[in-house]
Structure formats: structure tokens, C-alpha cells
Length: 364
Image (spheres, rainbow, N blue to C red):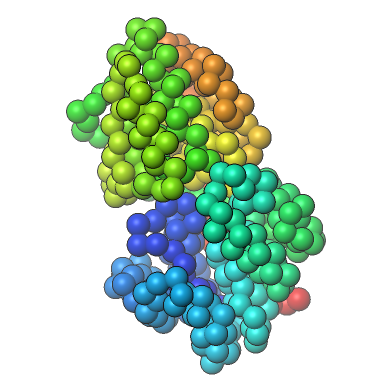
């Protein structure tokens, strides 16, 4: 029997990073499976999703502001779902509405709203800690993108361990690959990709990069990602730079992002903690040597496909960067090992596992 599944994709922004990429790519892969998908999307995104999801029934919605979003999520969405009569409803971004007529599945992306609230905007901490707890309380099953996120859902958001399924995110290996690309004007360069928020710890990367330049490196640093509430701190760190060059590219389209990965001498993701850390996987798939941090999902995902350092340790970060850049044997090992490691993480596999979760929720 083919499941009928309703998904609320309205929370994702037009320019997608992190959870927005997760929702888009998961839906693309689910669209190719034996499932009847009904997806609520922002009207501004309807044409794009129509091209990405040819077999899916789209339900465009106009949500112009935050007040309208709250009204949609709490008053309108449950009624729309009741009309569809799905077997399962999936809230892919922490929340589930009250009054669902069917079992609900919720994705809990990241425990750092609970564990590191000082690294998030206060309004988001207040909202997402409450929303995550209530979403998990209403859910038949909870999806976590890593074992680290699963532990957080259990320890901080009240999830029952038996109801949480780890479903790793993925990468499109047809697009993210080590194939060559034309040179960029700031080569050789170290690369960071991600939203400019305090949790990403980009100022520590800038300081470690400056030490490398002062020691004789001719590298430049490229920081690519949308400006978030921590962007001013990154700006200040770049302005204090006495040696080297920092290029802040803001948000870049996917094709340009892949080109950056392929041409970078090194990708560094110094995040304090992550529920998954998708740029780490993308960079490894492109054959870029990666340095990232211990203690959360990037360590779990990267394994021996990257060099790992403690978060917020500027000295360890600089030493790891220097090792990759100066030791061809280490760099070559990472260039070969990264794509091999990435083979285990695909959106097709994520979709298959997610469909299993839907079936488990419907059966329960």
C-alpha cells in the first residue's frame, strides 16, 4: 500500500542552507520513491518545487511575515492536513501542529538551542526550545540527523529513546565530486562555507589563518555564507587582520559553492557544535581536505576523512591547517579519503530511511 504523506516545507527560506537544504534534497529523493507526497510550500517557491518534484502534489501558501507564519502553523495547517487525510504528517523543522488527524513525524536537527543558548538569538532560543519539546511530545516518531542530535533530543527535549530514528543527511554525488574546475582569482585559498553566526566560530578561523600568513603562507581566506546575526563579529575580525586577505562572499549559488570546494586548498569548519554539519560532507565529497571539530556531529560524520581539533582551540586549529598545507602525504590522504567516506551518505539513502520511519509511524 502506498503511503500518503503530507510535509510542511513552508519554514525553509528562499536562500537555503542547513535545514533548508535538508528539506529540499530530502523531498527530491522522496519524489522518486513509492510514496504519495503532498507538500505545503511558500507560493514564492512553488515554481521551483514544481520543477524539482514532478510527481509530488504541491499546495502553495502565502506567508508574508512572522505573524502570518504563527497563524499558519497553529490555526490553518491542521485544518489543511485534515482535509488531505494523510497516513503520516512530517514536520521537517522541529515543529508539529496540534490537532493532527494522523501520526506525526518531526525532525529534531540540533540540540544547541538547549546546550549553547548564548550562541543563538534569544528569540529563537525561546521559540525553538518550546517548539521542539511540544513537537516531540506530539510525534509518533522523531528523526535526528546524527547520533549527537539523537542524544540531544532525548536529554534536552524529552524524546523517548525508542521513538528516535537516526537518519543521516546526504550529498548528491553526481554534483559534488572531485572533478576539476576553472581557477578562481584568489588561489591558493582556505575556504569556509556556512551562515555567519556565532556558533560557526569564524573569528577563530580568521585568527588562525592570520598566524599562518605571518609564518610565511601565501594563502587567502574565502568566507562564503549568508549574513546572520553573528556577521558583525566576523566583520570585526576581518578588519583587525594585519596580514593576509579575507574575501567575504555572502550567500553563493550551489554551482559556485561546488566550484569553491573543488578549488580550495583546504576547507575548515570550526563550528562549536552541530547537529549535522552539511558543508563538511559536501567538501569531503568534492575531494577537498577538511579540518573540523570534535565533540558533535562533524566528528561523527567525518570520521577519519578529516582532521579533527577541539572547538575554540585556535592553536590546535592553526596546527591542523598547517599540517594539511605543508604535508602532501596528509593532504593526499584526505583528498582520497573524503570522497570514499561521503559514499555512505546520499539523499537516496536518507529518503529510503525516512520512508521507513513514515511506515513505522503509520503502523504504530
